[in-house]
Length: 288
Image (cartoon, rainbow, N blue to C red):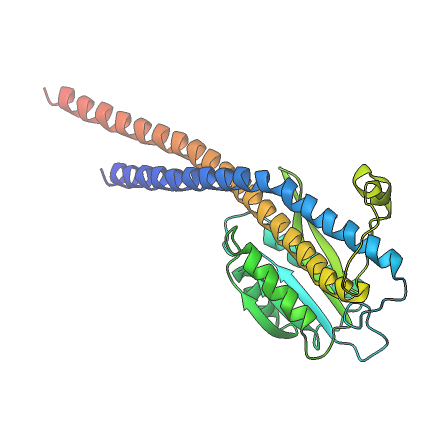
């Protein structure tokens, strides 16, 4: 009788876990689908800002910016590590942290003296446990609602830094396919526009010569901040999109495993229950 009670309680626990994982799977899929509709406008905005910046920069080749193209100076590196705010997303964070360690070893990054900004509680815990660098800011929550304010904060930290950064590296995940998420490294500083292949696109050829009242250098100084902000927004968006895809896959596997375990446990319960019934009937018949 005790074994039957234990199996019955186990079945209830598995059913509860299955309901939770199924609900999280639906939430992740819904959030991912909603974010997916915003991907194209954000990418178009990023490309448009970059093309506009390139157009004006070609007309003023002598323009220089100390923050974006730092001259030889003492190393002042900034590392932005974008993890997840919550767990239950498979190897999403593990692959990112492994990529970060591998990149740091291959490129001899001075992690002890680097300044670090962590985004997501998992990234913050990783940096704290491994005692890496000096944490400038820790931003725990990355959602669709906080994505834009976070990008503004990061851009402001880079543009208005007391001492210009010699390099700014962003470590994040991106969605290669819905079933595959990959870590990546993006260098924001030194600032480079890698859009030569886009100059032949119809949208770039349709640009007429601009007429402006302001000095072109002043316009570039404003546009470059918008370019950095657009790049950061896109990186944050990619990481958030990949996080929800990874969580959906993880919760989908968990739901399937819970169902398999539930079927096996119910079978064991029925077998045990049937054997006890048979034993009681045999004892009852033998008593006559």
